[in-house]
Length: 469
Ligand SMILES: [Zn+2]
Image (cartoon, rainbow, N blue to C red; front, side):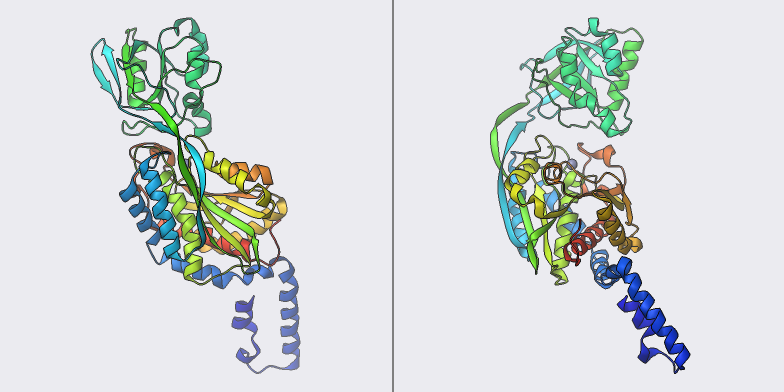
């Protein structure tokens, strides 16, 4: 509003006019004030938003920081030295950035290690397959598990073939549709097959066809079934096994895995803040998960999400912005194979959740950002939609349904907190949980746009006169 008056109606800028014209100007000013009841407050943030946007889009800082993180520490599985060292680095870097109240909150995390592993067709002729053991899987005996395979495309096919599953290695060759739908073969497949007497499971990688790239990820054993070893194979190898079975060939496979759990390890959620100038106990939280799978470098899942949310605070600090309320970045630990970081945050901050105004997670990769998912009241959605109008120049102004994230989920649910997630257009499921999850797939300009958008949302929600409800 200030800018519009300055450009069009400021008396000093106006040409000499008569009384009738002045009356018109006064009427226009009155109209613009009364419309301020709905939209005027947001205009006060236009200038700050464009400063945040130009600071971010004018640099490659976020991408360079992600490249440094992923090149230096690589993959960051819970319990690994890589994760422990990366956490110390993040704490030191947040302090260098001038963030406040930087700290580590302790979390005990599961410590699963992959060890050596292999899968090969042993007959009719020997062929090595490309594989990755599924996270949290048990290992095999040292000599491996060798058995005839039973290939199925779905749980229905497995049930129809249930009499033939005993003693077999069941191969789930389910084509990828949507992640939430197809991932059940990875998470629930091993126990479903074990219930029918299978000795091991191979899962076609959960992702669109790639270049013979296996995808790891967590399985979930049910308590009432034997725990059998399970691994992901590539789309190519799953289709090969399917074709051989369809031709009536008897195929035997040997799976070897050293996978095992070590005792729970010490880890931490990393937290940094810009303390609010008026109501520091009211908090806007942004963040991602700092742990990753043990292959690739966890650049997309979820190093990028960590860096762009952290970057939102660095940008505010750089521009000396101190909102009314606190903005907090949280780098959660152990999302991938336990979610212990998200659960620990909820438990430790339970008494403060009522003062969490908004939680925003970025964990869908940082490709071309298009907007945010939002879950919350209609009033809060209307406010967030207004704030997002400040992001039109970035093309990140779409506010869709279903905001949230794995790490913020426990707190959001316990505290009925409005939740947001960064939405992007990109090949997330092509590379996540694979050796190909590396920083070269990520565009510095996309990271800059995402950082700016999160900074604007975080800053305005933390600073606006009315609390988000
Ligand atoms: Zn993730």
